[in-house]
Amino acid sequence: MIRQILATGILSEYTGFEDVRWDRVWNATTETLYMTGVSVAIVFVLGLILGLLLYETRQHQTIWSVALYKTVSVLVNVFRSIPFIILIVLLIPFTTAIVDSMTGPTAGLPALVFSASPFYARMVETALRDLDKGVIEAAKSMGASKLELIWKVYIPETLPSIVAGITVTTISIVGFTAMAGVIGAGGLGNLAYLEGFQRGRANVTLVATAVILLIVFVIQFIGDRLVAYIDKR
Amino acid sequence: MITLKNVTKTFLNNKQSFEAVKDTSLTIKKGEIYGIVGYSGAGKSTLLRLLNGLERPSSGTIEIDSQELSPLSDKQLRKERQSIGMIFQHFNLLWSRTVIDNVCFPLEIAGVSKDERVKRARELIKLVGLADKEKAYPAQLSGGEKQRVGIARALANNPKVLLCDEATSALDPQTTDEVLELLAKINDQLKVTIVMITHEMEVVRKICDRMAVMSKGEIVEEGPVLQVFRDPQQEITRRFIKQDTEVDEKETQLVLKELKVAYPEGQILRILFQGDHVGAPIITKVSRQVDTDINIIHGSIRSTHNAPIGSLTVQILGDQAKQDKALELFRTYPVEVEVI
Image 1 (cartoon, one colour):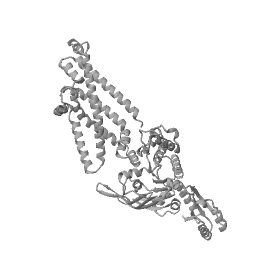
Image 2: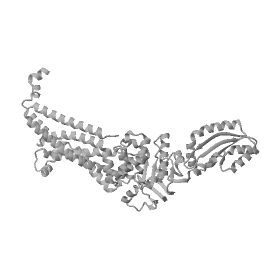
Image 3: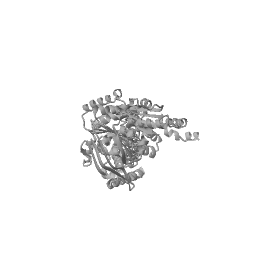
Image 4: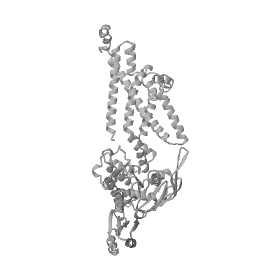
């Protein structure tokens, strides 16, 4: 078997990096980082707001908050459930309308944000629900307003979960950017698909894979360190 | 200082209404330590939360320092709460903040400037005896230390009232005593009115001036601690007092049984002394006057915030006439006598 593989030169397709166009790899890497970075920034803010909204409206019994909770909840569940590759295609008209150009890394952003924000919002909501009710009561007994509660209690007290959540979300966004390459959004996924697969150059695919792995490891490392640093429990 | 008039609080739960506090009226004086005892579910937590407006009464009025709470808007109520400190059974500190930042927290809410905050927080941390732990996080502190931080935090805005929600229930006996001492010191030095709810009679006995017993949403008994201890009116109050003395009680009962067998003719009395009379040589006086032997079975003395309470279980020996005379004599002294 191994001999056969060696004989047909399958393995040699993965080795030998002399003909890899490193400038293209670098380009693709910056595109991936750009898509990830911008969408994570938006997802973080949007997810946090949605998560807080879900948490706040869940507890109250008024008709408005119940309606709001149900609406947000359904939207979150729907967008979280649509497979990413379908969501991209589904959002093409929307994307064209707002980013004007259908190609390039920016075109990948709407789909990434729509897909990851609900995911992250649920994480934030879960983190908030785990928050000690006694601490909230203590802050209320000191006369804290809703806004003070959010800034001084909700967010600081759930920060390790919020950071751990955004780490996981970022990693899945990196994965999503690879798929976004299909609609011409660029990035390492695009490189692996166009140069690696369609031109039959497995070594390029391997390089793209290695770079993506490296990015994921670095994100995980930074995330873990950050959580360890802020968690004083 | 604090006046409750016909306060009722009804909760709606799954369309069933539940009266947590029923038609309760109460007056707590300025500067006193007031204890409310009751089993869990008696409504004492709700009562405490009515005092700082975390719960609003379904009917009735609550007045704190001649400020009625019910007409206040949410915003005014939040402002009012800054002058009412609260400490909790599980401390409820922010784990993400250091000791000093936890104490600064209510000051931030009150809008105190940074320099002022730190200055005030340092004073308080010193007052509760944690000067060397200023930069520690709650996770690094023991239960007693956490409660001290809780107390410092509750005092940050110079409150008129300090509410204690089972503040010592999660602490061991030694730490409980330390925290109670600290509360008594604060009451004495800062003249803060303290309202505490607890299920431990011991806590009330040790530091409260007056007390109330709560059962099923109602206050069933109320008065100065000494009086309630000396002369409880309700069965539930007796049970609470008994719980406080239980350790000795079992042993005493055993000895009593044996003595009744050994001296079937003797009469057993329980004598309760209070305050100044703890030191009076009543037993020997009676014994001499009646010329009979008095056998001391059990004696104990417990401190309360105001004065000690002593209890003595004795057996009067001799014939019936002498026993009756001794009993009569005991009743002439300012003590409570109970024939067992």
